[in-house]
Amino acid sequence: MRGLKILLVCIFLALALSGAHANHLLGGVSASCWKQVIRPDEGVDANIAISNDTNTAFQDVNVSWYVEDPSGKTISSGALYLDFRERETKVLENSIGPGPEGRGGKYAFNAVVSYGGEKRTVSCNFFVEIGISYYYKTLELLDAEVNNIASVIDGKRAEGFVVFEIASELEGIKASVRELRSQAISGEFGRFDERAKGVYASIGSIYAATKTLGRQQVQATSIILVVFLGIAAAAIVYLARHRKVRERIVFRDVQKIVRVPKIIRIRERVVEPKMAKAQEKIMGGKGAETGKAASGQDKGDERRKLIGQLEALERARKAGLVGNEAYIKDRKKLKNALKKGGR
Image (cartoon, rainbow, N blue to C red; front, side, top):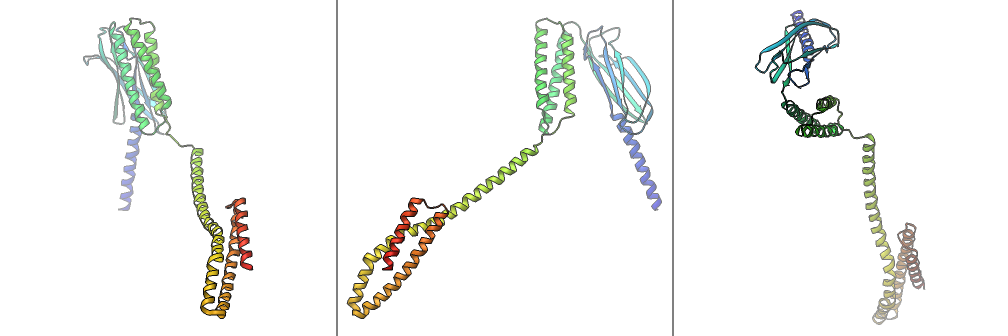
C-alpha cells in the first residue's frame, strides 16, 4: 500500500513537471507587426518570438503562421520545426504584405506554436490604407497606443511604483503625436513615416521600462532622521514638564521666604505686645513671666523657621531660580528678622 502511494506521488510530480515545461515554453510566445499601417505596395515585418524558460531542451517544436485579409481569407502561410536548448529564445523574422490585390483594411498575422500536445496562438494586426487615409490611420493607432501606455503607467503608480521618469517620457511622446497631427492636417507629409516610427520605438521602450520599475522606498537616512527627531521631541517635552514642576516647587518656597519677614514684623510690632499686655492684666506678674517664657519659646521656633528659609533661599540661588538682586533683598530681610528675633 505504501509503495502504491509513492508511485502515485511520483506519477503526479512527473505530470506536473511535464505540464510546467510545456506551459513555460508555450507561455513565452509573442508576435509583433511593424509597421502597423502600410500602403498597398509596402510590406510588414512580422516577427515571432519563442522562449524556452525551462532547464530542459526541446526538439521538433512546430511553428506555423498565416496572413488573413480584411475578409478573413488566408493569403499567405508557412511552417517549420525548431529545436530549443535550455533557456534559449529564438525570433523568426517574416516579411509579409497585402498580396497582389492590395485591398485596404485590417489584416491579421497569426502564429501557432505546438509542442507535446499543447498549442498556443498569437497574432498582431496591420492596416493597409490608400492616400490621405494612411496618415490619419497612423495617427489613430498612435493615439490608441498612447492611451494604453498611459493606463499602464497609472496602474503602476497606484501599485506604489516609481513612474516619474517614464511619465515624463510619455508627455514627450504626446507632444510628438500632436506635431504629427498638425503636419497631416497641413498636408506636409515629409519625414512623416520616420517620425512615426520614432514614436512607436519610444512607446516600446516605455512598455519595457514598466516591467523593471522599482517600488518607492524610504531611504535609511530618512528613517534615522525621523526616529532622531521623535526622540528629541519627547526629550524636550519631558524636560519642559520637569522644569515647570521644579519651578512651581521653588517658587512656593521663595514666596514663603519673601512673605514670612513681613508676617514676623507684624507679629512682633502688633500681635506680641498686645498679647503680653493682656496677659499682664489678667495674670499679673506671674502671668507676665509665663507669657514671656511662652513668647521666648515662640521666638525660638520662629528663629528655626527663618534659618530654614535662608537655606531654601541659598538653594534657589544655586539652582538659578532667583536673581541676584532678589536674592540680596530677601536675604537682608531674613537676616534682619533673625537679629530682631535673637534680642
